[in-house]
Length: 146
Image (tube, rainbow, N blue to C red):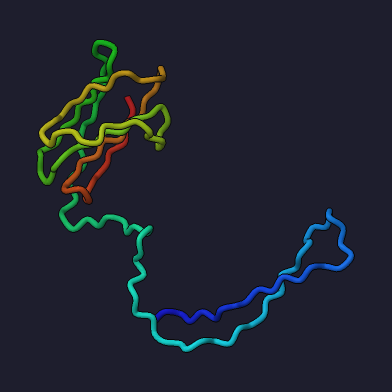
């Protein structure tokens, strides 16, 4: 059962003798409005503009193991191991700051176990977050740095 809300009508009353630099030139004065005919609301409240988070209904895949990085021809080569169980694709996100992964590759073939990352706009340290996906809702991540 949904909680009942009593509507309130707001009346604006100007202050007499107030200069323009007054903080509250108008003072709202709430007044009660009699409740209208109440009935139980049975409408669906999941309206447009709200999104329910995805729900994993399949088995969550095991995370990748033994992630490693190396540099090849000016690119970072990322490798990992996995037995392929419950994997439909991989994703790889990366950034110079842990937890702030604003770059990424959103779909990597399920059979891939390595990828080259190039064109980085920073030098130095790079953090990685490798996601193993089973359908579009079930994912396991491993976060690592070289």
